[in-house]
Image (cartoon, rainbow, N blue to C red):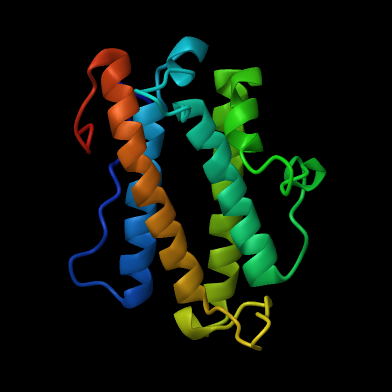
Length: 183
């Protein structure tokens, strides 16, 4: 049994609030990524499919960066922390994908889990104020607009959904694991 299968599989409520539905969808995507990357050694996390250089380890590292950057930059209006703040993203936009092979499976999984935990804490704090998903983040576009919490969370759901699709293909090529739910 994989590490995610041991936990209750997250399922968005059938008739929950908007926040519960959005957060439930995000948690289901996070759980699917965890399942698709679980139980693999460094070789499995470095596997690619076809001409793509995307790996499961690279997806973990990339999505850790997405978690941290979305909430630091868009919600809090703060610079993103380590290790992301040491990267020259303009000259190395694929840094997370490229450097994942240098990290151990435990380092990659920890990096991603901790980033997701930080995001959950930020969202929990934001929702505890009673402002719901309409609250505006600190980031201001050139045209003066600010993203609300709903938009930031939906962007994360979209980002995960796209990359969980990649993870499906890569994992199947590694050991034949298919499906969406280990339960």
